[in-house]
Length: 85
Image (cartoon, rainbow, N blue to C red; front, side, top):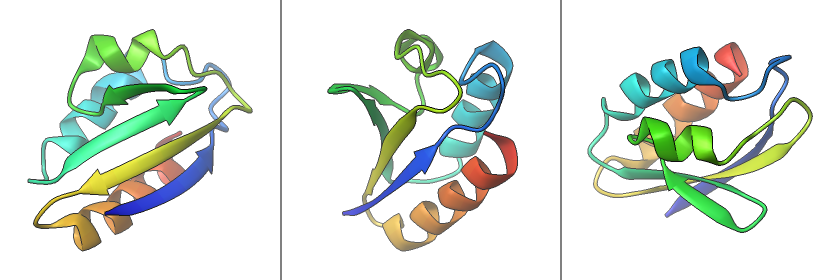
């Protein structure tokens, strides 16, 4: 299992458009990718669950990646967060 924390810099947080892009990115990997904020967790492949976390700018999320390709998936997801969120 790989984890990393990321503080959201996008002015509107994880809303519809970035959440949709995040879902598409997560579907590229076999591993299960979960986003956790304030004790609530959502799978990164589920758009409504992600949006339900209500992540806003300045809030920190924990990303957990577990599965066969977790090394690559965790590195790519961290790059994705830095570039898009």
